[in-house]
Picture 1 (cartoon, rainbow, N blue to C red):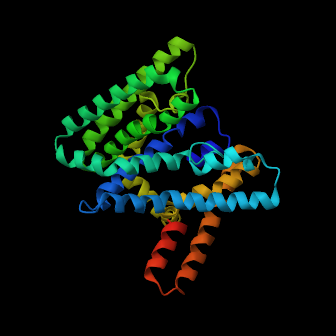
Picture 2 (tube, rainbow, N blue to C red):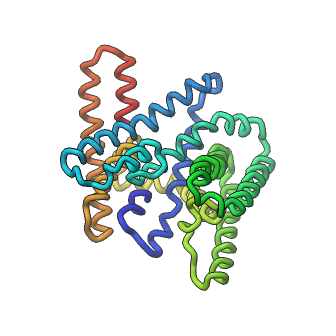
Picture 3 (tube, rainbow, N blue to C red):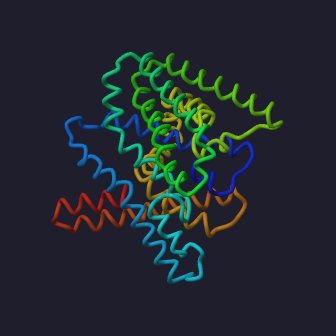
Length: 322
């Protein structure tokens, strides 16, 4: 869905898919709850996240810029500011801001996990998250005039993303513990909030306002729609998995799931330099990006078999696969 947004989709299709980034953060919360070791030192944990999230992006960006330097030295992407902000994950060539979201959430994940384990009551847990988000929403609204300048914008890249996406992560931690009926209530409540806000904005502006308009920085309107779709997908996840098995694409889906970061990275140059009707472009972009990631993983596995150092094997695998 994230790649679909980048290929030039528009209108109702663009709105329908606009649950993608929050869904990935929700899923990361779910997986964190299953894999996190509470006795692990914080900085060791954080270093692992940096290696898995930031270093692959820097490797890709280096390959991308060196290739541009050789093939298209006049490219605007080679502008010094563009290069620097790309590595800083705050703009640049575009598309890499999502990695910033993941690393910001990773920084506070152990602390959110502690909160999650301390508050056993679902009611108290979600009321606390709602209160924090309400405070954030007020601050977001009041600070909008001040985050347009360079200094304010730089601060907002952290403050206005780490809080709301941290809350989404916290929801993801708790979802696997909820009963289906509770998830239905969460989905319905999110849908009602989305509809009420959409109607209010429609009456004010005279037309439907896409949730995309409230994504940078994110607002409750953007998250309400995303949470509604995400909870609905979770309720039907077993049926979706059964369908994948039935049409025999579960191995492809699993590969994409395990190597999503590199598929995402490889899609960037393809989406930037290939043009066609958006549906054709989507099929080609996602297919080529997946094929490139598959070739990469295949070659990496071949290479690490010849290495004797287990530590080197592990680090190469972390950086260049999954």
